[in-house]
Image (cartoon, rainbow, N blue to C red; front, top):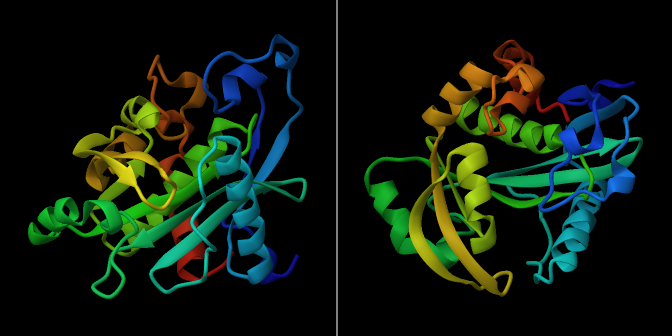
Length: 248
């Protein structure tokens, strides 16, 4: 494997389907079985082919929910796109947009007045967007994408807050699983043609939860958030080094 092909991080997911899957509602009983050990790789979508694979998954998952999809994921200096793959298939992706004076954030289209309040307070904002996880995929994939984006935004570049636009029916999920708070109410999201609620998460809070629960998984003591499925803190230096080097 060449240097350019090495992932940011790889991990295995043992366990039962119902313990690991990210989903809403009941699992089909036919899917209740022991999974073989499955290996996932997280990479940076730093080539045209990888960006197109991530975009294809977004169109698939957003279309399944009946949402419109904003065009393309053109490479830009103020954003990175991460994707997860297993056995050569792309099964998860997210794009992290970093606020700047020239382009701002996607959420400015609908919530500029709210975001400007935070900017005036000296907060540095970034926006996880275009998040898509294929059906039946381990919750560790979701946690890995968010954790790596946190390292990139907070630990490397000093950003202070996540802001996200989510469909109202997903608000409880993001509050319970990651600790997001209401910030901005509900408005129409013009990019996807559906209502959206603006949420905010202080990245210092996320860091504290990672230090407390990261890597615990089954030993989480009843903690119901996603933080036990984040990486343990001792994995962060290696991830940070590979992100700084631009390794995919």
